[in-house]
Length: 365
Ligand SMILES: [Zn+2]
Ligand SMILES: [Zn+2]
Image (cartoon, rainbow, N blue to C red; front, side, top):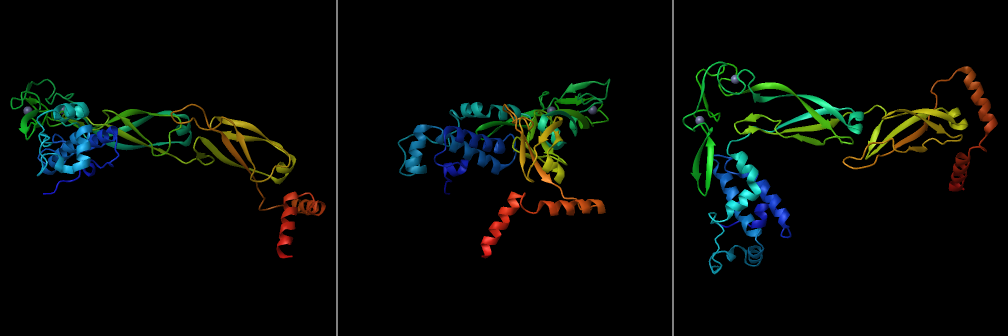
């Protein structure tokens, strides 16, 4: 049987730092830990394989030898000498695991409930300015009839004798002391005289709870907030709740980083003569001066009227693009006035148009 390359097992490059190794190993160990995958031989093999790879590569001396000699470096044919057998997990690996995997081992004794993922829709303004939102989550949670005792209210509940109330049975599994959920009590550790009629003695039933989610100012569409312990309730406690934030579109505003973009239509007379405009911003209307002779497409910057930089200091700006709107329908009188204006103006007072016509001429001459 050919052994897989240690770097390949961990999914890292040969230049991986200690931190990279740790991160890669932690992810694999979480996924394949025997406590999380009872009776899954393949997961156990993957876990052992990853542990071995990590153990060798996280030791500078052994990594150097492995880089030079490959698997031959450790007791393979022609190897020898080193006296290290990486498949020997009895020494030291426990420390490694305790150090890196403490949480998995602690939680792994009794499996926590599953993580939940839900979506939270927020308005453009809420995402920009931040908000506190209530979110109704339906999930397996502590039974409200028996308060998790598993027994009908007023009846006696004793500890499960099969697991002595621990809810789990420990056993030796290869190199590891592993544990599995007690089959007699289903992991509750309790034996009710009269099982609760609502949760059938499990102490857990589906229920809806309102949770508060803090939407940080400047949050972007698709960002996830994790509420520890907000997931499904299991024998080892609740899983986590992952809230994916979805930002609604705004009828007027668009976002570019921390800046807010909007387009404001003005009439031709307003652009020519200048005026003061009411501009909507995230925090209400502000007045903006439109100077005489403003061109269509000109962008004005309203400083500090944008979005708080996410997780940082400072605020973006609001960028206002002015667009000259041409009326689609005009009255007879308006037509007369515009025709008179056109005759009066000619092209002389329109520098852009005049230069455009000049260029056009040059192109075909
Ligand atoms: Zn109950
Ligand atoms: Zn039990």
